Length: 279
Image (cartoon, rainbow, N blue to C red):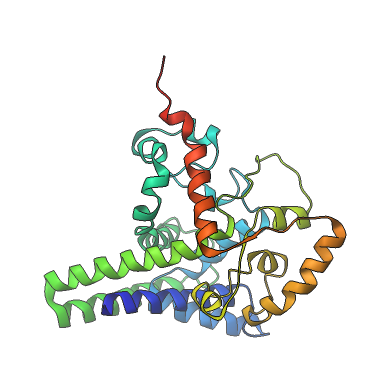
């Protein structure tokens, strides 16, 4: 249970990192950077990698070959993408609706090692010395405390449960945002408003949902106003919807359960060609 609690804590810290990356918390960028660096130290996530990846997603959500969130080697988000997959990726994509939740357990490790790989490639980093130092120091503290108090076997089990639970939590939050919504070809040209709205899904709000999703259940509003603090997203919803109604742009909102039903149905449909027997 302690490992699960730590997973919830880490994910909520990463929500704060997300907010600071969007400059939602402080007016001065450097203060937001300090929050990002602190989150990097505590969770192991590389701030510059996250910002680079996430800002690219915001510029072109659900656009093939641009949005890294739909370029995942274990899953396919279009039939063309599915047919081009090979090896283990082709196998998991074939039955991806069934593998989706089990593979979410890898999300936390994917974010951790994605950032480390970014550092090793010496990609552009805002703080090229401080970021690697804080991430390495944080991981050293994390591993030292766990193995000192729990020993090698219980420590390894604790880390496995912690990372798996964190992956499922984070994946369950981020998947409803865009998965199962329209996928755009790399050459598709849409104006900002249409691309941000038509590729996003809102999940109906409630005090519990707003906390669980870190405010990201108001995904349409967040994509239109990424710098808006999360506590104002719900307040903005009536204004945004009135404007979109005037423009004739539909907004997609579902319950939590319906969002996951749509995701699984989409994944199963996209991978259908891989399950067809050759005649």
